[in-house]
Length: 129
Ligand SMILES: [Zn+2]
Image (cartoon, rainbow, N blue to C red):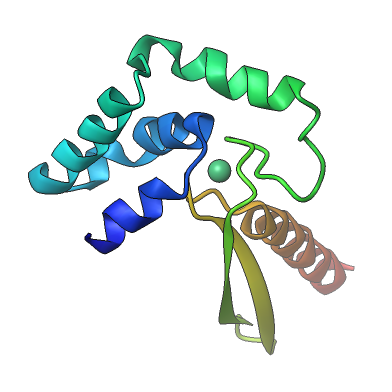
């Protein structure tokens, strides 16, 4: 069994459909066939993707332990060091990003982007005053 097959084997039905929705186009033909075969073997219908994802959400799994986009609870954690600098400042920030394994959404990264924006906003403000 390939790593992809092992992975999709662990997915719940709604996760498999979300996986198809968000990732299918990023795979090569061989892998796409494996994904479609698994969907067919489970008797799932591609037309029901959003229904399945909405149902997962309605089951109450919408807290912080679940991906806000596809409601999977399968994540990986990546460490990244970011460098922020301009002619006045240089700082390094270490980040622990949690990214959804199914749809690759990273809420932490989104939050970080917003924080960074307000950080730069404050810096510019300080310089002007
Ligand atoms: Zn997700």
